[in-house]
Image (cartoon, rainbow, N blue to C red; front, side, top):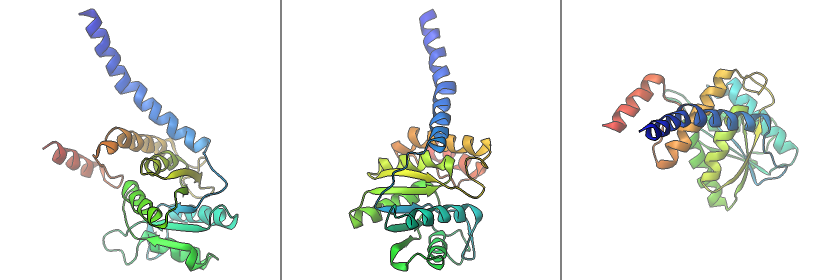
Length: 219
């Protein structure tokens, strides 16, 4: 009986302490020590908020990083990805392409994929495009704490992904708050425990939306 209780307590500790701690560590470590290669076949810019075609500050920082990588010759193409919110006149992908082409990147070197309102759906969209082009190596230009989850999803779908964290904007490693780290670690944990098993929880869900989603799934 005592052995059974000890095993139950150990299991609870693993679930409550060790697994979340692991998610926090790998998310932080990827931000602090990005696994970045100096050459790839494409750079990807995950979508973020835009306003009437103008990138918001998070998306702008990602675009600036993608342009920096492209200017240094790390990859010949850039893919911008992301749909629009309800009522938007354009998409995150289109806003990203417009900004890049207005800042010296040839239109022929930018592919806009107006698909996806969360990381997983956006990743599926650009991986599908990469497969059609028969390319596999990608550098993801995104927020520091977003790197681990973005790379994990891309690698799971068959890409060889590394990440180059943004060097400006509100979501650099220096500017990010611990709240963002906790949020991303939680989203990463949800993906590796549920997402890989086909249970997709969008990172665009509000707290109330998440509750409704889980309730509907259980029913």
